[in-house]
Image: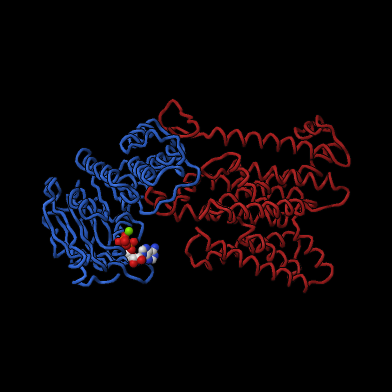
Length: 277
Length: 346
Ligand SMILES: Nc1ncnc2c1ncn2[C@@H]1O[C@H](COP(=O)(O)OP(=O)(O)O)[C@@H](O)[C@H]1O
Ligand SMILES: [Mg+2]
């Protein structure tokens, strides 16, 4: 593995994450291996988005700190962080009546200033980002008029235009049909292998996670990390049942030999009562 | 790839984006505004030919013309232009920050707060002109702080802030009525007159104060213009892109509240301009980012034209300009509510 084993560019210690008084995670430690494709999985509401927000300095930890390139993330200027680390939040609102090109161009903000609003470098990077995500033909269309899948790729293009070596993507495949899901995951994999980017994505499909991740972080309700590491080392039937409450079998994916999760049939699942949540 | 044009210097460091359509709209509005100003300066009880108006403006007028143009009419015209621009920019900022066309200073109570401040000075403290303006300023800013705190510091986005603002606005309105019932005869009349915004007795002082405020706060707001556009995509996206959201918001809210409060302090509450001018401008420019300059031009034009109408069309009755803008505003508000409820927004 090429992944750094010592201190990584993005890591956090002793995190306590909370909204007002309600704690989502206590004593959380995470390390995102450099140049990895890290996938975060876990049941609904276990705190995956919250973790990503904390890593992207959107949520101030009540305790502990997030480190970026060796320093606490808050010590950087905001634009400096935005040149190193990009985040695609789970719910992003496009302003009404904006064109695809204009939205993607907004990703250039951390590289711009009041008098440097649109350099030729900006133009080249935005064109490249739209080409990579396959939205170049849509440049002049209104974002409001796109399908969910097209819109998702436009947002991805905006984050790519930010040109950050570290990318955090919160459920980048929601709203996409299966082929487009794989397209987005292929794109992430390319960023990781060809461009040496570090990609962190929250995914819901466990089999996609196993197939694409070079590093898997499994979170359980209550915001603890149940397991982490290479999918083949981490994923077992016991773990999936323990974390998701889903009895299953783990087999080798016939295509890639990555672990593949096959849920148990309904009767067998009913036998082991699934905890309600 | 992107809309609009780009101005690049030969050195690569300078590149500016230019929205052709917004630029054209602003230029047309400013031209109309200039024409309106010339009409306002040249017509009236003593008609002055446009050539002599221009002569007086550049310092070549006869003493008589100088007096009519520079002393009697220019302060009023300038105050109308500056107040209209200040209100419109205030509205544009607040509507963009709240992401709602109803989030303008006159709807969320800032204007009624200014009125309360002014009435307290007129009726309770028996103060003079300057004190009244100061009272209006303090009242407007204090109301903004209260609304912000009552919205439980959840921020200015969304409906909560606007609903709290509408509630506070209604309470202040009741308070204002109560203050007037307590007033003595003479003060009561003075208070009533103040409550309907008017440009009937503005002087150079008014024009200067509003002008200085605009000169300081508009560049400050413009410096956060790109940040304002990014904030419309939600805090998460804005932070991710490197916007210092708290700082941007403080500057923008501060500018909006102060512009509205100073404008109201100078002329009394003038309805509708802050609410409608930015919306009208946005419909014309079809821009995605809130256009401060086009809004300012639209606000200045609306107020100047309204003031011209009440002076010339309804003369010799001394109608306050608030009557004109208020009645158009009511109609506009109904239309806005009707169209908004019918769709578009969730
Ligand atoms: N803005 C918020 N305010 C209060 N509670 C929140 C907020 N966002 C998320 N939560 C709560 O925090 C917990 C974790 O949420 P989240 O991180 O979004 O979960 P996930 O992304 O794993 O589905 C949930 O119980 C959720 O209700
Ligand atoms: Mg989530």
